Image 1 (cartoon, rainbow, N blue to C red):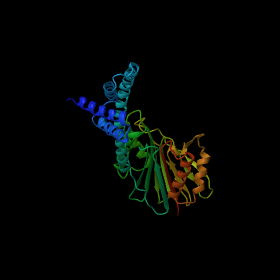
Image 2: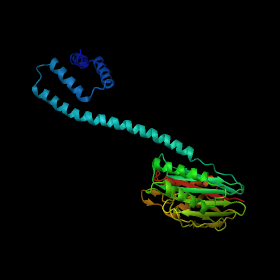
Image 3: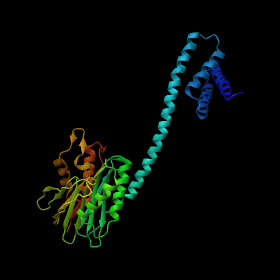
Length: 336
């Protein structure tokens, strides 16, 4: 006896039992048969065929119109079965992709991880939250032998795994730089050559590179097309942009990056950010710069990490807790 004949006899018995008795036991048998059919990969249209064959044998006097209706149902289920199998295949692929992205996201956090440095008379805080699993933002700190601290914040115009791989390459390049090459302009020029040679031309990277020297409390900085930061004057309570001009990384390998500097007094603060902060979007559109500054001003009396965390919570609330872009904010505050 063939496998189909065996399944047919089993189904016919279930159907006969239910027609005669309408018991819960018959329904339970049908559920077991359903699970068995899935296990042996019986398609929906094959189930209709089994049903039609069974009902014709159990009730040969059924009206022809009813049997013809089963033919229509069979045709419908054939198309349904094909679509269902395709859907199941796509779900399997989707689960595999989700698993791969989770692995890649964990690797990204490990590869791009950085420690916030601790230096006397300066308080530093940072927060970086991806809008999705993979982040297109990146920030990095480097402590130097002379006590100075380098800071970099970057944003890739592009998302997902390619952006994560690109960020990993940038971090490796930064970690490989010689100790005497940590001025902001030099950092950007070296990274620009790396990006131009190794990154797809359709991907561009903005970066803000800074160096804080606690010896003279001066902040040196350069920008490669990145979002301007803010400087907070502790004495006057005024905010102003840290404007710096420079070409995006990867556009021209001969690009030069001008270096700027700013004296930092006690109570002053430097705020660096990605466009996920300045271009925070609500249902009514982008927030105004004055709104952002207002939130920063509200918490500027706190420690650097508390400022970053509180501002993030405020902007997250404005967006109904659904970030529309990667969010990165760095606070450098002189305390003494």
